[in-house]
Length: 228
Ligand code: UDP
Image (cartoon, rainbow, N blue to C red; front, side, top):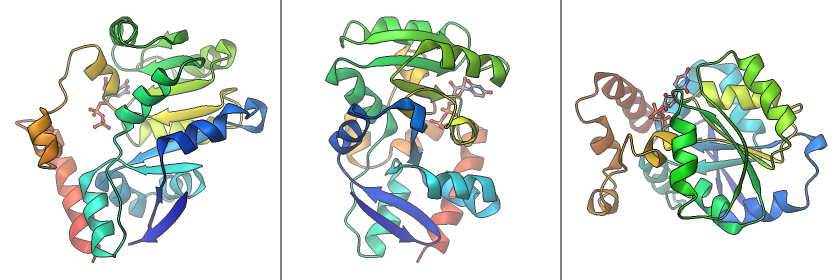
């Protein structure tokens, strides 16, 4: 793994298999290893929030989930490939032998996501809870589950700060924030078609007519334009 620092942010260059290997023999009592799926909006927010910046700097892995990060890195002379969090999550589901806890999204969505994923991958689920319960309740359920891997899909930065605050007591080996992935797996949201992804326009496709997403994109643009 190579860690890059530019424009006040940190991002790692690695393969998904390195994340898997590092957690395989790992004991959860040492604290969860945290994966942050970095996009330019989060990078921008980290400039305003010390806690978020600290979470990113102290995470075990920060993967470039966002074309703005990849392009900003390229400007600085680094060769990075985009690594969407949803793809890391599916990689972990596909390796076999791991148990998972799904925390996030509206009631019923995580369960639907699990049932759709079970048609594709052979994995063990040890718990699900929606993303609108009190955090203490979610934490307790996660701790009792004995999961190897925790997926938190409550949106950023909420998901990343939840993991960061509790990483020493979660009792899991690996915890990753994966935004809207449960909605995608449950069939409520679609990922952009392949040709849109190839053109690196997934962000534009997702924004569509959603005003909130355009606001988020303006933060992403601010990061990208000021990172030269
Ligand atoms: N969400 C949640 N709890 C909250 C706020 C949001 O579980 O308090 C969920 C929301 O239902 C959605 C996900 O978090 O499933 C955020 O999705 P979004 O597409 O905004 O995430 P992104 O991938 O863009 O970070």
